[in-house]
Length: 232
Image (cartoon, rainbow, N blue to C red; front, side, top):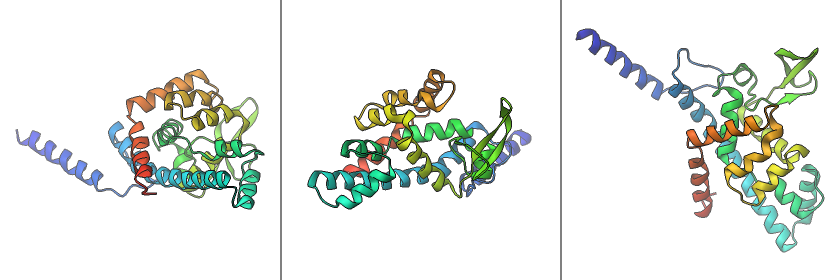
């Protein structure tokens, strides 16, 4: 009986320590349970993704206002150049950020819940590859006879910003951005991410499962409520 009580005490104590832990992206605590991995992941990613989404949504709303009222056209020209578009509509499609739930699901899948080497060492949350050694690190596995380069980022915030920009400017994700702009459901929008992985349909199916099982759309509901209440 004493042994059982002692084990129970140790469990409660360790849980309390984890609960108060100031998580680091660089350090993965040993022997974490799946629940603890997820807790660490959400603690690290949700605030950063939430901030990035709000900044991007502000930018989208401001551009939309400027276009509708035919003002600040120089700013619109700068944004069109940055996002590699020519029309007002295409700019708004590019600027509108996709739901937080999709971002978190991709981050979880690509970084093994924030425990992958590229996440901890290079802040590479989304498994983004590069074309050369510049700004990248070599992966352990090779593709054919070639080196696989994985991008390095200064911070999680930089990685999130670069990820949103990539999906807004790379031609493979035009359908994804269009579905998002049209306000389709999360599960419809992710159909435009088949090009993100060689697994294509399999990747989208896993992404949908990740969102549904972990109830990630609650983060979309939360930010939408904040926007409606003008808390941005």
